[in-house]
Image (tube, rainbow, N blue to C red; front, side):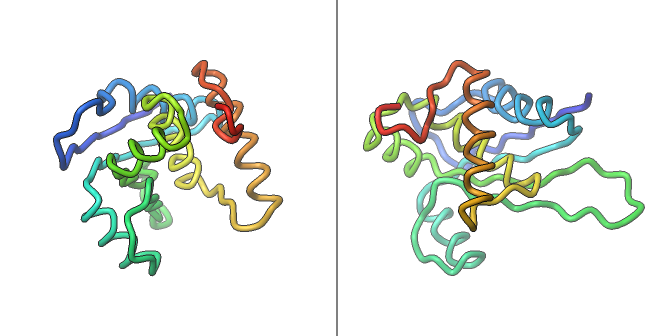
Length: 152
């Protein structure tokens, strides 16, 4: 099984996960789903997140994670799954508001974003239920509590 994670830190901030953390989290998803792949993760500030969110989703505010799946042209042997852009400020604020361990919330955002790269979504209730169940299972493998419980 081939898994590669390239991490770009566009900011300096306290308590950012290490490259090894990102690799563990992405790897947990890809191993469970038996997928080879390469993911690029970019850790950004609120301004960059807001600009990308406005351009690609029409929402003029920063967000926790943006997923940009790579569409491999037919016949091209590339395992690039896509890019995740994660806003450190939003993740830290959400973790505090939701009273979650910061590193656990980072793990959740990476798992969530990686699932998006693999085609999972939460637009309708059935999709959301399937994706959230998978997230719970994957995070449990990492000894992280259910992120959808109010007391998680």
